[in-house]
Length: 330
Image (cartoon, rainbow, N blue to C red):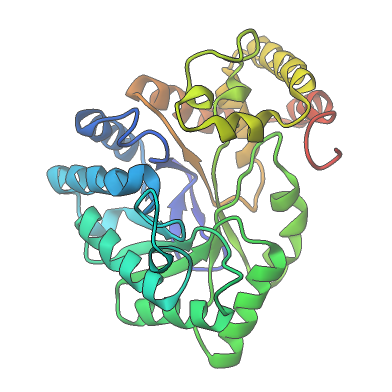
């Protein structure tokens, strides 16, 4: 496993990590979750990502039970949660957002579900225009000074919003966010590669990127059947298919068809190639993998070997294949 600095912080995070969104509590039960986490940990993964909203808290409960059973030394791994959407399906006004009340109570609830004394990373899962930035930054700073959180970050925030948080932190001598968790893959590139460029150079932003396979679309499993079994067609996740395909499904299908053919030509899986491509970006601290089984996880972990052999010709070929459909040029 390769380990990278999380932005300008002193924290070393595995280049590949394991997330529980959609899987834990939906596709994965306690026994399977234990096998997945054990496989990941033994491969060198040290970061396990979660959130209050995942399976309405059940995801964190499962992860907490697994961690208790495995009994790893707490100083050998990193654990996260996220706050914004709330835990219940229809949250009351005080059960969502980034108010001091909800951030504080969400942190305490996550600690209880995960059965841990502190969170290594605590993310503001979305921006909250209804809450003053001063309130958000002061609350995160308080949790860190209380020892309940070690580092805080953002997820799907704009570059100006992140800079605003840093400005508030500097003005009041508070602890600023160290990382952002953005959507990043061969289709979704603009934010990570363009919008945040200034932040890498100035505040030293780290990134824990999610959806490296565009919810499985980049594996090629949907190119001949958009209704194939998988994450894109889970009940209640209809919005996800629309987000991935947008208004150009035919063009994206053809691009993925060519991408899959190229991956086979160089004797790697499309998933491994898509993940390895992300790892070539030096501003990516870790790629969050999702998996519903250990075989899938073990196969995708081999992306690290593909990354180590990645060459400029591969990159040029991928750029040519994906340029008609990525959001940098479209």
